[in-house]
Every structure is written in C-alpha cells, then in structure tokens.
Length: 277
Image 1 (cartoon, rainbow, N blue to C red):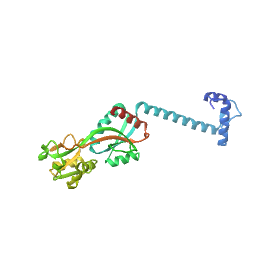
Image 2 (spheres, helix red, strand yellow):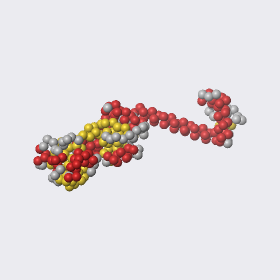
Image 3 (tube, one colour):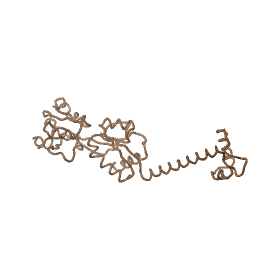
Image 4 (tube, helix red, strand yellow):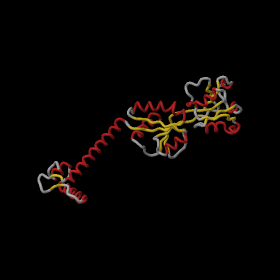
C-alpha cells in the first residue's frame, strides 16, 4: 500500500475513509483472504493484495491505452470500411473517384473493396459482411441510400456494322440480329427495355465480364447492350450507340438501416451524405 494508510488511500481515490474501509472489507470477505497487513504501520499489502493491485494496475493501463486509441481514431479518422461493388460500372468508374475523395478527408482510413454481382452485394450488406454496397436504386425498407451516379443502357456495335452509323438504336433495329446478353447486373433492365419483344431476341452468346462482351462484339459475333459506365475508355473497333427510348438507372451507396459497425463507417457515410446530396 503506497499511501501507508487507508485514510491517505481514500483521499487519493477521492472517497471518504469509511467508504474505503468498507470497500476493502467487502473485497476481503468476497475473496476470503486478507489484502492488507493491519498489524504494522504504515500499512502494507499482503502477497494476495499485491497480486490484486498489480492486476488492477494492468487493467488501468489497458483502459488508458484503449482511451488513447479511441481518441486517435476520432481525431484522425482511422479505421477500416468495407464496400461491396458490383460489376465494372462501380469498380472502374465510380469507386476510384469516391475512394480518392474519402482519402483526402480521412487519410488514415483504409478502404477494402469486395466485388460481387448485384444480388450478392446486397446479401453481403444485409449479412453485415460489408459496411456499404454500391447497388442499383430500389425500394428496400431495410436499407438507407445515397444517390451517387446516373447511368443508362447503351448498345455495343462493331465499327463496320451499318448500325454503328445510327444516332440511336431502337429495339426493332436489334431484334433480328445476333445478340450477346450480359449476365451481369444489367440483364433484368435489358429484358424490361425489350419488353414483349424480348422473346424474339436472338441470343447467341452470354457473358458476365465486360471484356468478354467487347471481344465478342469485336469479333463480329453480335450486338450487345450494357450499362454505359461499364464501358472502358478504350474499346477498339467497337462503337457505343445510344438506345431509344433511353433507359436510365440510378446507382446508389447503400447501408443497413440503423447504426454503424464502426466510427469510421459513420464518418464516411455522413461525409458522403453532405457532399453529394
């Protein structure tokens, strides 16, 4: 006992002497052993008392370290956030720009991007495997959304195809041609765009990766329709042609309704919410 008396110990702790004596007696009763040698002055700890004092000191040091770490996280914005991305639209055109903006504000933050298809991204979000997901706008009472991008469907046509010279392509222009169907997130939208004509579509090839679709078009094996943001900056021998009627789609950042998994996730969401809306 460094203070040498219960009175001094109580004063150092900011409690009364009777309260300190009562707490000491309660601890000794609970543990079934003496913690202080009372037959000598100044008072000193027993071996068991020293063991408990050392443990309490270690816990205090861990608590102080934890508080310092939490303060550092709040001040520097440190931490890790996980974002589920679907397809080339999000991974190549959207996330790099927003990740760069996040790093400018939170330089100590780490961003981990996990790639899924649209349905898998939603599952990962709802199961808590990621903090956020880039998804197409949809009605979902369990999610909160921030609208971040507008996108639309476009046709991919070989540069030597007569359709490449048209200002816009209608479903009637495509319906009798060999078609390459994307099996990514845009497939349901393409079905909606063709409507009742979809059953007549001559689907000759299907592919998930945009690079594969471009290669098939480049080889003259058909026409495709994809999301415009998914198309890379360089696409030799392939022309991007608007479609009519236009089919816009909204891309959103989504999170589960309610709280956040981490302070870092809260900071990023609040920053994007203010800077985009």
